[in-house]
Length: 482
Image (cartoon, rainbow, N blue to C red; front, top):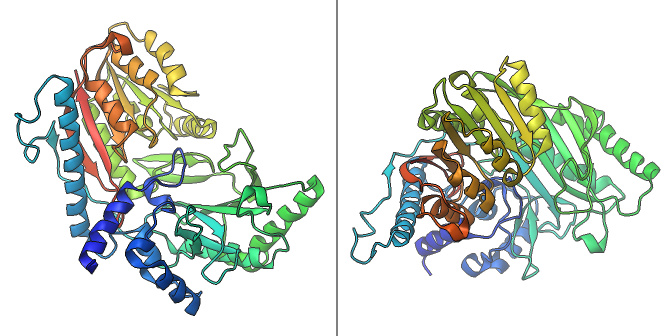
C-alpha cells in the first residue's frame, strides 16, 4: 500500500473509530485505542523505534493517531472537513427522502442533493494548542514502564497497548504536557503501583488538566482506593499535594489540585466527590461578555475561542426576540442560553451534571441575569413536564447540544409534540448513529406508534464550525423549523 493510500485510509479509520467511552468528552480528546493501526503502519516498527529511544517525543506515530490531519495545511484541513460534512448531509437527505416515500434512485443525484443550505465552514481562531481540557492515561510506555503518562497506541483486543507521552501534539498546550510530565515524575517515585486493569489492583489512574485563557490550571487526579484505610488515603493525598506545592511539581504552578477516589471507569461528583487538595475550587473564563464559572466535572467546549464562534452561530440561527422562551437542552454550564438571555423573555436550561447547573446559576447571578432557570436531571424526565406549562401560545425556540450518544427518544417525542416549538437548533460533533436517528425522527411524518404526533421539522440550514483543528472532527449546527 502506497504512503498516500495509507494516509487516506488512516484518516478514514480515525474518523469512524469507536472511541474511549465518555458521555460528554469531545472526539479529539479520546484515545483511539480500539483501531489496529499496526495493519497500516507496522506495529513492530513502532515497537522497535520506541525501544531505541523511549523518551523521544517527536515521533509522528502518536500525532498520526490523535491528530491525523496535522500534516495538512489548515486550509487543506478545512476543505477535507467541509467535504465530510457535505457527505453527511447528502446521506441524511437520502434517509429523509425515503421516509417521505421518494424513490432515491430517480431523485436528484446524490452528488447534487443536499437537504438544506450548507454554509461555508467557520474556521477556528486558534489552530495550535487550543485544548482547554486534556485527559491523560497511565499505562506501560514504549520501554515497558507502567508508570508512563500519555495517550494510547495499539488495541486492547490485541494486547499491544502502549502509552506514549503527548509532547509535540499540535492540539495540546505545553502547560497540559508539562503537568502530565510532572505527574509521571511523581508516579515513578511513588511506592504505589498504577491501576492499569481494575481486577489486577493498583492505585494511580488518569490525570485531567483544565486551563483557561488567563493561564490558570486545574489538575484532577483519579485514584483507585482498593482497600486502603482512610489514614493511608490521607497519606497519599498529602504526598501528592506536597509534590505539587513544594516539590518538583511546583513548577506547574497549579491553581488547584483535585483528587477523586474512583472504583469505576468514570465517576461523577455525585458518585464520588472531587476532593480539593489545595487552591481555588473553580476556574473562570471570559466568553461572549460573560464571566463563566467552571467546576472540575462541568462540560465546557474544549476550544474556547472556537466555542465563541460556535455560540455566536447558534445565537444567529435561533432568531430569538423579547417574546421568545429559549429552551437550552443539555446546556452544560449554560453559556448558550445565558449569552442570549438579554434578547429573550426567559431561558430554561436542562443539564444532567449537577455541578454544571450550579456553575450556570452562579454565572447568571454574577452577570446580573435574572430571567433564567436551570434544572438538574435527565432531559427525558424533565422536558415533558416543563413543556406542558409552555403551551400558552408563547413561542419556544429549542437548542440542543447533546453528547455523542444523541438525545433520548423521549426528548425527541417531547420536542415533536410541543406545538409551541417552531424553531430548533441542533448542534452535533458527530452526526452518526443515534444523532442521525434523532434527526430522522424530528423530520419524519407523524407516527402514532412512536408517539410522534406533532408536525415534522424541516432542515433549513447547516453551518460547520471547526473546533478541532488537526483532527477529522467538526461541529455541525443545524437549523430546523416547522
